[in-house]
Image 1 (tube, helix red, strand yellow):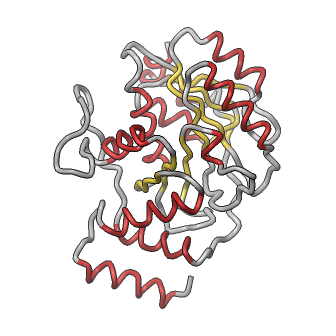
Image 2 (image 1 turned 135 degrees about the horizontal axis):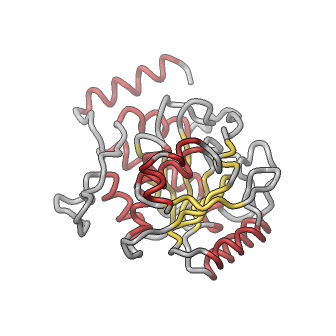
Length: 276
């Protein structure tokens, strides 16, 4: 985007008097992004990790408080397992294919044999670099639905690179996107959740907004957490919306997946307590 246009957008936000979060620009950008990818709702957070955290906390509401798993790939985006640890969920590592997607046979075994409830399954999808078939997405989603486990599709910086016949959101319960360095839309740092379910959207919004919904009251039943301040500025949202409306997207960098199963972090006392 031209530097002059960026300055115009920044001045527009400055002169609006709303410099924080959850103002007109963030709400408008959420609606624009949801329409862009064919979802009912989208919410921007300060990072991909922040969006993922709010989503995991929302999906954790349905579970007992005595331990659970998040199924992630052995080769995966590091935050898939690290953020899960941060919210008290143990990563359960699934074998991965050459395109870093989850191996279906091993996923079946993990869902069937898990000794604790599964909070969610996370599927990394690098559409700019791999031909991930819609038949595969449908098979994974059907498997998760049969096990009554939400499926999160982490598309990383792959904004606008999915070219399926149906919107990507129809193959999962929620999508994650990254608008940081290397994304198709790079605004320095930001992330988004996109989904179709209104109740989940309301929960995620509250978890990212210190326990508050769009009105003045608290919308969460809280004991150990009041939700985090995972919000993003109006400037960032205004920039993202302009990129989207002009379809000014670049080819994203390849997703930075790592073999996570044997990382030293899982030998820490905190991780061992969660993963015991």
